[in-house]
Image (cartoon, rainbow, N blue to C red; front, side):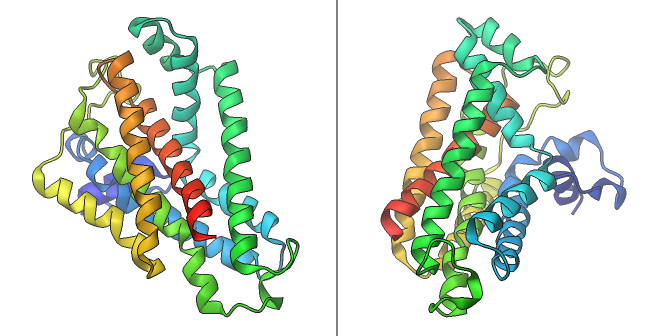
Length: 268
């Protein structure tokens, strides 16, 4: 329970740390529970989108759902994503990449990457939901022909992609060493590698929500998302022979986007 509270405190802005006294050892083992925190953020997006779409067009509901996750996480993963592109885009060697990623100022590569990411995320999900739910692009949730259960099944794309991408990305700590020492780390924290039990738990928690679709075709986005995470991990290996927290955030953002893009291609 202490580790779960530590994970929720670390990966969200909710003050779960007030419930129990947490120490450094709890935070060192939060990554195996990262997919479980994805249940919270994914369910929040799914609920906010569903409620908003009762009264608003799908594009507005999507923006509100995306903003909800940003508010819950404090844009933690997006910050790492931007730093990752700044470092890997502007750095010429290992030391310069690490130096740039640690800089709190955002650069051109990070800004461009965030713009492209949010455009792709919004347009992909907008096209997906319009294809699944609506007869007209500007239609609202309550006036369409598809029944509520069908809508719920396809809205579960949020609940499927977020935890799975976090599980796929979490494996980076088992494959690569941390790039910095504890004193130089942003959070002054180095994550412990997972035990076999933690690996199995993360796999189960990350994969289970995908089967809300009741359709085996969802395995295709899962496979592409996992492969994308593997590519990002390989890039970190080639450039750094290690990982940082920014690498984790970027791996999650990119592999989740790959999940959505593939889902759009195969489910519609």
